[in-house]
Image (spheres, rainbow, N blue to C red):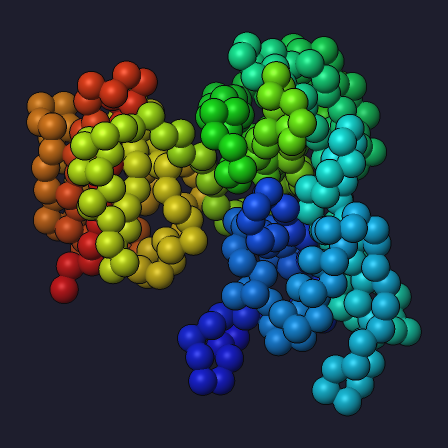
Length: 352
């Protein structure tokens, strides 16, 4: 990783490396990996180096729209490079769920393609009942030919390890309640249909309404074998209305973090893109306890049991270099909003 001259943009070398991006509807392509380096859906333009930003993004947009592979050559800084981009398609609808692309020398052999799988679920809107499920060949390969079964519950019980299953189920459940929003979750499976060993996968998924029929919606996603360090993103299901929502939202500011916390599980629901802006370590699990100093976490737990709001000043959060950084941590417990009453809204601002 390097910094471009005259800017603060951090970019990543792309030449000779496969790039995988997902395609959440109505959003730019989100970066999932460059070679063996994993990401959490960041902007391609802000993450790729100059040649990647100049050549790959344009090609990827074209492939995303027409769902046809592209393999061409382009001139770059006096030389010629090969630009190859393939669509990643949903197995039922044929919708583009992502792209896989590479920029390399025209005569160079391509490196092995990343192993990715795609799953598509057709779900009844009113009941959340699974109507249809399909995997592509890559998904079967990741599961080592484990066969999907008729219902989501049966499939989870048969193929997904109990270790971390609640996190995966929670992400799927929350994802069904909000459209066109990425969730990124890691989970363990029993590959090959047996239960003698585990494999950790990472799933980038989202739900989308059907353009022609309101009685069902789609859950689509891309799975890959997991890598260390990838952030976990949980969708935020809005259950807030009226003055209370405005009050909580007013905590947000450009110079601060605005997060939502489930006070039953202490899971984070947060905008991942600006986490590193404040020198904080990007969370790799959903748990607030993993990125908050124990004494600060205990103080928040104790305060939220007896009060409706409060301030921790300072609260110590885990920095990107492993130290504890002081923040002013103002929180509000959400009440009288039905399912949302277990949530806490928090505003974090770096202490001077």
